[in-house]
Length: 447
Ligand SMILES: [Zn+2]
Image 1 (cartoon, rainbow, N blue to C red):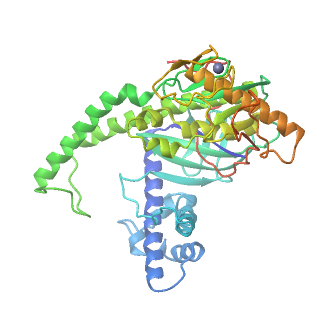
Image 2 (cartoon, rainbow, N blue to C red; image 1 turned 45 degrees about the horizontal axis):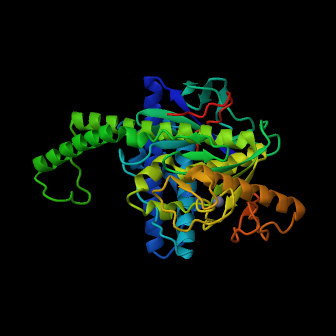
């Protein structure tokens, strides 16, 4: 399984300068390759990345566009990987675009990158750098200090250096062997109800609140965003533009605008970090402490269409929680049971199995006709846990035909629940995540 650990680089000024130049080189090569690709395509040729790279190699040390003021080829000062990789990236971007279009999904072709508007990053192949404890030795820059040591053991596949809100990060891709997984600490089965008021409610009754970083900083975010927009409006007025800025027109940026943009970016980065920290700790805890866990197969995209709840839902990060559960389950040997999207986990009474059809979203507690009073989320989590227990039993009895089972385990009278044991897929090729896998004792952050 490919895991990626993103580590902050404690870069010196000289190192930051090199990183910026390398990322600028990668951007410029990307733009050259994209322009050339488009030119060849309009002439009816079939451009490909390998041929483009060859074409570029022929000119990169000679063509006046790639020489500095002294007539020296400045690409020689940047490591080769930074200007070779954009071709592979471009080929992949086109392939993804055509695949999506063929599948009828929304897609846009690769775009030109613009300084200050795009992500600054460059690639480094695995044979060109090494990691030694809390430092890395990168080509052309030498030793850089890292904020922490690499956490994953396995074959290093490559690395990306990228800038986020003024800091440079080294994201190392590691091919971690599937089998010798980290030790699991518990063997229970648990149902997990994901929600907005508590990010996760367990069938044990435990409620884990999410930090909801966006909600907490929304006021500051609004202030900083408004300040930024005022500066842009002022710059537009100074340039005599009314309405939207014409395409290709660049406004002069004041020093204060640059500063404001930086502080806004820092705030956004902080929000993302708080959220990522929470989801990583939560999902690691859940997978490490249980033999099986059941979650609802939430339709996150559909839920985000609800404009009144969208911000809260996005702030918890349901989709990411589920994605992390699925790949961490592989590492800990935990089974994830996905309850059918239409399984009425909140509406079934976990004591008698009766369905409360009139339950609304606003009702946090309810009392069943049988006399049992329920906390809405705990009740849902217990139903999910039963589903998992039933699915596991059915799975053990019928190793082949797992999804045919109808494990409405709580009571025989439940409507067809359609619980499904998902043999969690081998998630190859995902490259995201900061690699935070917590090793310390259980401390699911409660804010
Ligand atoms: Zn009941």
